[in-house]
Image (cartoon, rainbow, N blue to C red; front, top):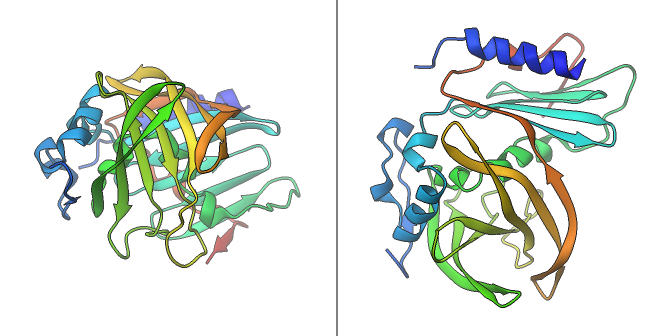
Length: 265
């Protein structure tokens, strides 16, 4: 059934109409995505974007979809990249966000026990690295390099202007290969539901890539065990399959709340 659902999603996308400085901080000002050029990013971020196919090419994309295999079955995430409307479909529940309202639809009597507000956009954010940190309202600064198994990775600290997103106190550090510019690690904090910034970073390793529609995106990512705020050894791997990335926008009915679904405030 999930295979059929994915084929239906692909068909919906296909028939839809196309929707119309080192050591210093750089802030991306509010502007339309079509106006963004690499010149507004610091040199190290531009190098990272270019190693993955270019931020300008990414900004042409409208729809992203991928599948994660979980113990309960396939989790299929579909996102409209311009509005961040999203559908996360699993065998036991569906989470939907239409750009305004968040809802959960429980299936076959299963109780959804997660935090839909926290999970919305989470895996998409990790998957869409490094391009997702090309959004508006982001501040870039140099970070201390990461040394892992004898190799040094330069870093870019990413933080947010006040009021940007659900968790504006979150911080990320992208560590990259100094020669190629390709992203190698992501350090991130979790501040959802808390006040203020955190100093506790978690680490994901990005070292398995695939090319989708001209852009280099993760094939899998590895979460690491942390000691003294540094990665020590691999904890688990998340793989991404059935990836769709297209300039064609999805059918927006995909994100509409079905009858019986619960609105999450």
